[in-house]
Image (cartoon, rainbow, N blue to C red; front, side, top):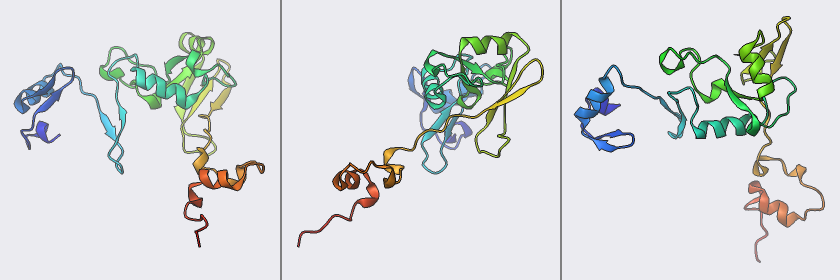
Length: 195
């Protein structure tokens, strides 16, 4: 941002081309026909955590992330694997507005839906919206509403903790203590010392 604000004359980066002079980067960024994409970073680690898409169709990496995160169709009770589902903008993408208007292409606004559930949501009186968990959970839920007004809340799946985060009591008793100690990072340093 320092280059755009005029605080620095370091070269700007033009996607697909490479470095360009700072002044040219400022001119291109200020052009009314330019598209901006936000790159959000984690405030603690500084690593990139989200890149906005500027088109209706999410980029491949975002598709993979959403399918891995949600695992199955987001319709109530549906178990169709996410790999066989369409990705739906829960808040409809507004094709006539820059960046999709109220329904931008972002991972937190996309959910997998099998064709059987995606089509009625798109073409009939069924609706789906993102909202707060009625039971106070931290993640947003999808609230499905039928034409008769009945509602269902669908929560994101709970993923299992990785093995190094699980309590060692979860290990089968027939696994010897050597393997438990080897897999449990908290046990490091508790090795017997040679006399």
